[in-house]
Length: 234
Ligand SMILES: [Zn+2]
Image (tube, helix red, strand yellow):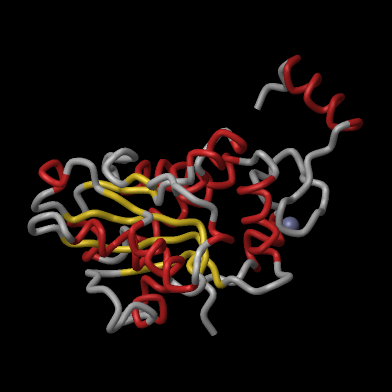
């Protein structure tokens, strides 16, 4: 490849402003994209697409009916995946969502159940957080999946309702009710009869995905699948 003047400038600048791997902190080589080669090989993959039912799907058994579920990485406290997600959410790195979203999308293509998906729906961010962060990390992941799966992203079909009073002032029961009513579908007719792929950054307890999926399932003849960059299962 021809060494352009732009690359010379890039090399020069990287002497002073090197890019770091968001998973392990190593300085990135110019040929490394998003994470270092070592991390791209060793970050713990779930291999969810190889198993049916897989552990991510089992997490939702008896809670919400889903067609299929898959995550790309295993989430471990203090591990590289946690650092990656931290950069995606809090260090202004929406590109991490797109890059690994696309990788996740390539994984989903291996499972025929994901091929009937009509549209991709990111878990919405609270409007206050969206203003602060400038982007919704789940929407970035959804955009990456969309590239691989060749399906549209529908970011407006699911919305987060703005709370009327602060969480701290509420009783435990009210807080529980709040989780159940936090999401809304403004136009159920629009999603009627569709297979929707709900996307979040990390599945920990699964309660966010559960609440959002149940809300989507209230619309006529909707079926739902789930995808996340990481899942916290042993
Ligand atoms: Zn690394």
